[in-house]
Amino acid sequence: MLSDKLRRVRRTLTFRLTVWYAGIFTVSSLLAFFFFYLQIASILRERTDEDLSDDIGEFSALLAEKGIEEVKRTMIP
Image (cartoon, rainbow, N blue to C red; front, side, top):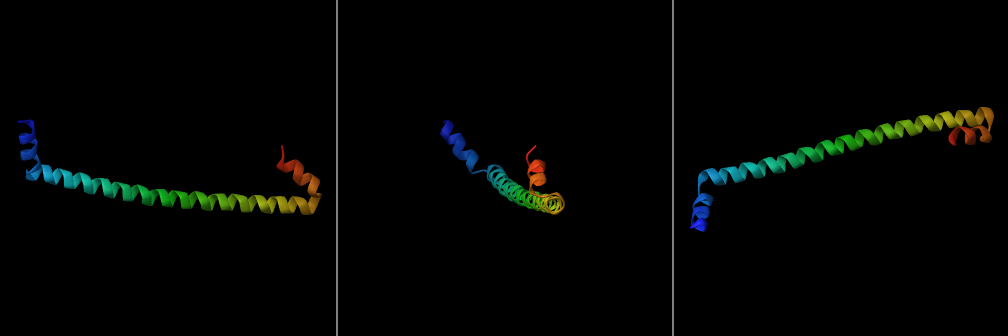
């Protein structure tokens, strides 16, 4: 009895459209999430590279002015 109702429900247009829309929504949501994840990862990587480049410049200037001991003291608090 219950299986007959389930079989009838599965054949309805409403049920099939609902399944299709749910599938399309799931796939498009996953694609959007993946795209935003790649964008955020790229931005974070770029900012990290910029920060490290700035640090290299500061330590290079410190090394040229005051020597390696001052660089060591600055790097290790």
